Image (cartoon, rainbow, N blue to C red; front, side):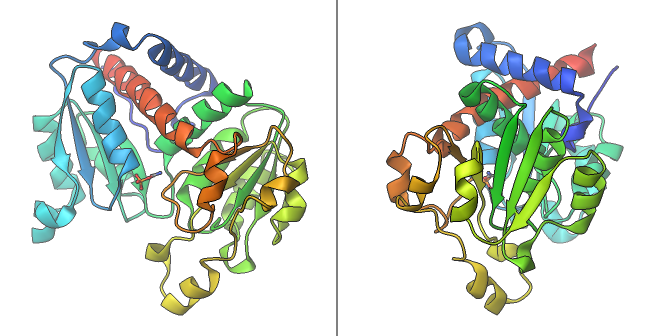
Length: 308
Ligand code: CP
């Protein structure tokens, strides 16, 4: 058995990612071809932290493949509330399902689960660490709308310290040619040093750190906005001080090139004004749809690997 998990975006090689994205595009073009591809299979969604998109897109993906879903969306209704460990829970779930997606507030929890699991484990977001299926979604969105994953200047704006979507996306994109980043954040929410050193510097990827959004916009191919995450702060005063630091408005969009895409993993709070939604460059709702196709491709791929 060649069972694989997806804990980090680097768990797949660039070639494997290309194959996965090609499969996702085929699913998008020919959904009927895949409607029974997972008939008789079960996906468990174990969500110890709130979610709308990730959990429901996984469930939608599995249902669109003809499979079934089970799970919990609130750990307080699971035996975690009685003190059951992640290691024990995954051993139980392995008896009930063929594949599972886990979100957990603690960094590393899906890794612990994968070590004890006899079914593929997908990291659906672990604390401030990684969110690899959001990254697959982002890669498919960029590839579909820009036509390439190389030769891009990407602005990452907002909470770069705790933002797991940003950490995962950087890890994934540095493997493509001629990528550069503009890191736009207040100093308190800047990208952690270990990512700058171990990922950007180690791969000779150019980046600049700035605090102002507008002055960076003309050079960007992609502007990736993020939410300042209240749940990651230890101090409410700090959150209140920083939460509205960046608000993308219709006026600010005038600084951007005509082909610059605006992405956001969502949910948004105030960081993109709703009036931007009508701008043809605003691509965050298209991104949500790509998330379903790419999760269908991921479920199919991991189940096929486990059976081979
Ligand atoms: N993008 C994302 O992870 O959204 P949810 O928290 O709603 O799953």
